[in-house]
Length: 621
Image (cartoon, rainbow, N blue to C red; front, top):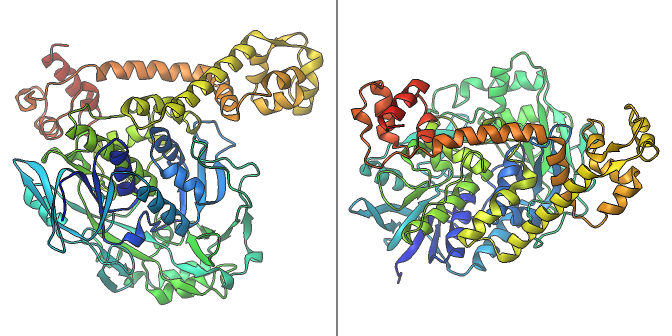
């Protein structure tokens, strides 16, 4: 019934979908196995993509040739560029999405991708031969052979759902958990752990009073994620709303703490630090008398509302009573309560930077199985695992991104070298070179690399080259051209900044904090005439490069310094345990994680600068 596949992908969440698409688009024969074909790319929690640092990841996925950006654009009901008041390193695109359309468009994209087959079933065992993966066994008893395997099992591995004192097996509410994979991996020698995450109640939007809330509209001139022309910006956006909890709400919630599975000790796994439950917030931030609640529609044609900020696993009657004390929720009707889910994960220090496991060849992990949280974090891992699964079986070099090349590189480097014992979420602060890793230049950073792989088309590369050419032309024009007092002083006076007494270079005017490129185009006729035919992307790129040139130069110097450590390669058979001058703990960590370079060794948790120096001496550096 089944032939041997090049790549089998287990799980059709955000990681699995990207993995299957990437491997197939590179030419591998792919089988995507999922327990429910109707839940492909399900938005299990928030119906949104992007946000702080996450938006940069979606742009990077798109630049490499993944589908998350395209699908997000097609299902967008609201677009906002976050942090516009801050520097460009912090600008982060975010979309509110139609949850049902998102899943539908992802399935359509996969079905239209040649080389992707589907099988609805549960994987219960993994077969290996000579420490190399060779097949999976499904719940229906099918043994399906493969050359490479990507596991993207989400929250389903031995998942347990908690609502107050109630607990029952499940990978999502109403869906059964997955059994067998954890046990199979542990037999092979892998270490596993438990984590938890949670989700808020969903309510009937018809029962809410929006007049008591603050309206939150989308951007006046919305952008989009994808750099391709396959998508367009959203029209007629849907609004979200903001309301707040209060002390009365908190008092009601506290009455359920003794029944909370977290406080009663029924949950062992750690939850996400940066997306805490409402009971966590009340406990950790006792000095606050209110917390923000975002009221977010789940789509164009549904009344279902996602209560962002009210994630909880308290008893359902406590949730209901507390919700109705929030302004605007006095008559709220609940579709389903919030819940916590506890699941197995495998510490990612057991992986290589390619996301291949160290123990078993051609076996890759991506997504929440690696201890991450978030659609975007999962999707980018799936993309990289799918690419590398294809590369490995075709005897090609692994595709690995450095920390100075992409947020994706930062994420994977953090996971593999530092590990995580709580759900890992990406932030701009995790990237030491974040001014270089902006959302506006992901195509410039990554499309050429993707084109060399065979994912990005010739047209995409040409589009990037055109953007770069226009950017350079704008910078040259601003560097060489002067403006007169008559031309620019009216604008400067209006902005409340000092006027100029003589001709100044355009770059000198743009460098002022009060001035931006759109203002100069609006007020200076010569600039307007010169730049009228340039693309918005090139204009943004040129402005950032000119305004932040000094900071960018400093960052590049730091990158060059760190890259020198990456040039110091460590042989595969190097015996770390023999370096007696290094502490036993450091030797054991190095021996376990097997870093490929001095730079990677330096980033392993617990490895000191002196350990690195000694290691360099032993390597003859």
